[in-house]
Image 1 (cartoon, one colour):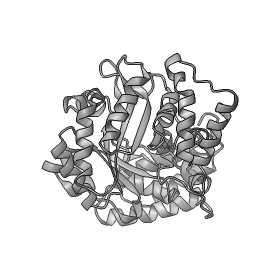
Image 2: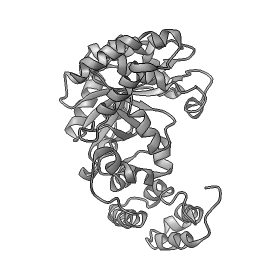
Image 3: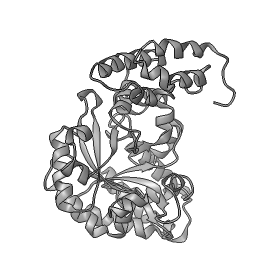
Image 4: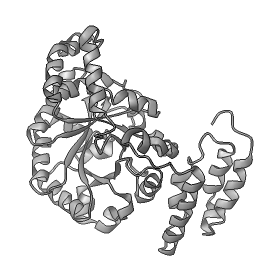
Length: 371
């Protein structure tokens, strides 16, 4: 019944994208917001209600382990792994993870349906809860491999890739994409892209609400310069009420998460969750209905030290873990000293966990005004 009601509302507001007027007033606007609140009811949360984005060089297994200590329910993603790395490289190095990290999704980069199907099967065999196809990365290196954001120009190929993976695995196959490529500004571009992929059976779309500029901007600039168009993601949910739409891009606070959840099914946090991981501490209670008291920063640190000890016994370099915890005390007194000690190469090379005791001493310093 709720889906039928949403479809009715979508027909009442469809012209807003064509006219550029996204301001819904009167009864329709009120009803749309009411439906959004019903869809985001904490009694029946989507498992992807809050997630942390796949981020190259950042969301490795050590990062995910830290995030999982802080939040039991936040949906986590791997870094992007290319099909070539899996089919011709060291599979355990790319896919190994601990059961404690779950739920966790594997993001794949590739454009050959058969290769993606084989890679997705490996991901399922290793225990991943979802296979996600990267159609949003704008880097030139990724473009040379004919995947990432440039795939948005070939929706039928993406549909073929999705179908090949869905025919091979039983876990969900999802797509992460942008709202446009280069100078394409029309909403119809992303609408038609999503529609084509949905016909192949994909039901979950992670929408980075910016265009991808394939030439002239670095990946960092592509995360900052193209303007955010959250309304495009909202309109996708109205046009495709049966799909699960996750919004991503520039979201920094849990209040913002709550606002977006009035219009879409989930919110993906990016760099803010990495630089300020304790942001995730309130996610379980606020968005998943958990009644457990969140761990304090000090309790998270204690579990991190235990993790470091276990990993160092396996030969893991201490700095490979501590680099993900530099922001644990962000905004707290002495956070700069904490970061300085935990990123000191000489101290890290000593493989001595007393480095945490030394870092903690700085937390007694006066609070930084500009943290």
